[in-house]
Each structure stands twice: as C-alpha cells, then as structure tokens.
Image (cartoon, rainbow, N blue to C red):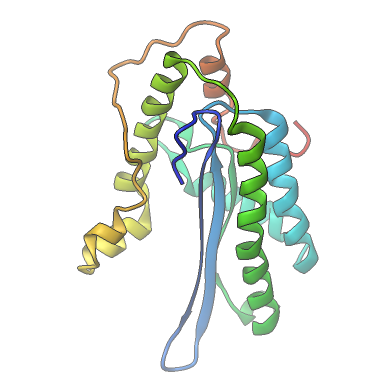
Length: 207
C-alpha cells in the first residue's frame, strides 16, 4: 500500500505455504511498516501488536523474526532499513518444534492482524494536512522502496527469473516516485530525525 498522504505509512504483508510432492512443507511471510516520517509511538504500537501474536505461539518468535526483518528489509548500499521493520520468517515447519496446525494458526493470525492494525494506523494519520515539502519527501522516500524491491528483494528476483507475470510482480511499486541526487537534509528537521531511526536493532517497544 502506497498512500497519497505522506503521514500514512507504506505497508507490506504476505504469508505463504509451500508443499512438495514428497510431503515436505514450510510456511513463510512477514509484515513491515515504512513510514515516510517515523512516529515512535506508532512504531511501538505496531511492534507491540506483532509481539502479542508471536508470543502466543513461541516467546522467541518476535525477537527472532524482528531481527530477520531488520536484516532482510535493509539497503546495505544506503546503510538504511526500509522503515521501522516488523517481522519476517521463512521455512517454518515441524523441525521448529511446532505442529503443522500450530504453524498454520500462527500464519493465519498474522494475516488476519494486517487489516485492523493498518486501518487503525491509517485512521490516526489520514486526515492530517501536509505541505508540498512533505509530499516531495514522500516521493523521494518511495525511491528507496523501489531500490529495495528491484535490487534486494528475493521474491522479485525469483518471479522475474522464473518467467512470472511481470505486471503482477512489479505491481507493488509506488504509482509516483522521485529520485533526487544528494537530497538536501536540514539539521534538526523531521527528515533528519527519520533518517536517524532507519537503523537495525532498534527496540521499538522500549524506545
């Protein structure tokens, strides 16, 4: 989702299940939030909701999957995370000590969390006014999102390498985007504050 209002964060979510002819299987997926301007309280709220679901199934899930998201949704050539992260997991199967039913329930609960959680965040921000400068910053930050999807995302690469439907693979791109050479960042601005928080290993729940 790429909202028009720069105060409403971008969000991504997917869950998946694979099963092979030999009966082996695994679950994967994740959900992450990419604010144009980071609101610490909303980032905390987002992560608390994810942790609550994770803890119902395994108290190690949130910390492990949060670190996985930090490392996955990262632009090493920019030294920036894509946003405030979330959780990411793959290859979950019975070798993880959970039954297939338990894993299915976990993945379903993450999927069902998406709409109410994001709708709540949208409602908190959608009526906020924004300036031309804030809109310009949004388009610039969307450029980082595109960089990640085209350069780093394994799903995009897999889809294109296996002759998937290109239109469907690239539909997650923002409708409008802007690349700026050395975008000027003013000192002590909201833009600078956001950049300072695009880091791995931030404890958003305790921030």
